[in-house]
Length: 266
Image 1 (spheres, helix red, strand yellow):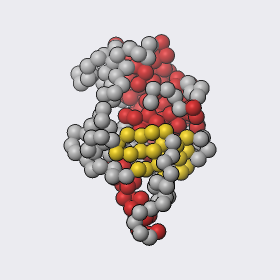
Image 2 (cartoon, helix red, strand yellow):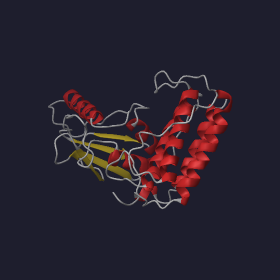
Image 3 (tube, rainbow, N blue to C red):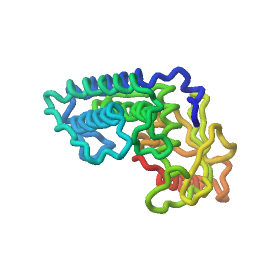
Image 4 (cartoon, one colour):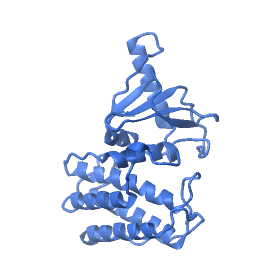
């Protein structure tokens, strides 16, 4: 999809990155030793250092307009815990400044074969900051609901570049979806139907909800977090074809599991 979903109208990538980065830093500031539930082995300090390095990496790509995979980049050393939050805040602001000043159509290397330009970096960094902001808030014992516009656009971006597709096939064969799965954003007038694409082990999506198909219905925030395996959500089996309610439920769960195997991002 080349245009923003109507439910994401008015989305400002740079404002969202700034908002989520600031909230991440605030949640982490006095909690660096806490564990991150969904990143096994990581503390909050490890999480902040990870996102700090992600910001540095994409700032470098955009600023130097690198068009080849930057395997030779020398990464800066991790800041001390004492300096980590300040360095993270500065790095986030620096990345936003570079991205805001750049032409989004400028060609650069990205890991997404279908979009290798600075616009991809700006768009994807919204969900990078948002999901890890949620991680930091969760580690601090805080409830966190992500905004509607950013979540809707991030869901659509995930379904574009973070699943096995005709334009981005996996290195090794993966099972077909063998069905349709519907995601419904319950309070945003947004839905997506995911189905098999023309090549084995690839999928595509369309806006809108196919009737009678297994579906997952939740807020845009929870749908995005479900895609990133942060929250569990029930699947409605729909009309079902397995002969019984129990069989339909099992078939729907198996469909979801096959979809999981077609996703590139944990």
